Every structure is written in structure tokens, then in C-alpha cells.
Image 1 (cartoon, rainbow, N blue to C red):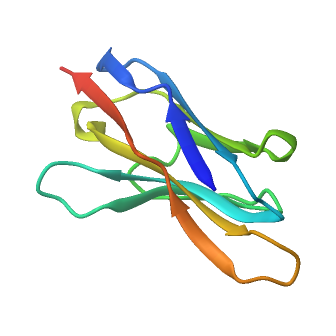
Image 2: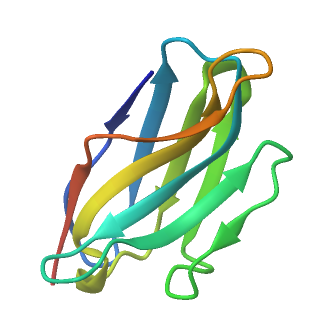
Length: 120
């Protein structure tokens, strides 16, 4: 299983970016997908998650600015980021909890990360 992210880049404060992450490989079902981020010198932190039922969970710091969504048919999760601030600068990682075959265990996978830089 592989998670491939895209959509990072450099944006000015107040701007927007949309991240995408697609899972591929031997996948029976995806239980949940999410985004985490890690800034230099700071532990990786949760940004947002979305389980298979479509409910959402956000870190307090991004509520009202970020929106997570998923396309189950495409095994893809998105993160729409609006009103970005320099404090949002970090490497953003995609995460997925995946059952690879019927009745099999659940594994957690990570993407390679995509850099988001917000200039002031």
C-alpha cells in the first residue's frame, strides 16, 4: 500500500491550498484517513481525520479554516486549507488505517509528506 500526497507549496498569509492524498495497492477497505503536520522542532500533531462514515474531527487550531473530505471511490482524502497563517507552516502527512484483505488486520500507513510554507 502506498499513500501519495500532492498540493503543497508556498503561499502568502491569508491564502489557500488544497492537499490531496491517494491510497493505492492491496486495499480491502479504508477505515479512516487523516492529515497530520510537523513543524521544525515540534512533534507531529493531528490536523484532521475522517473515518469511513464521513464524520470529521479537527484540531482546535484549524477549526473553521480547514476542511477535510474524502472520495471513497478514489481512495483519496483532501484537505482544503483557507486563511493560512505562518503558524500553519509544516510538513503535512497523510495517514490511513487500511484493511488489506478480508478479515485481515488493520495497518496504519503514512505518506511521504508535503511541505506547506506560509509567508507573512
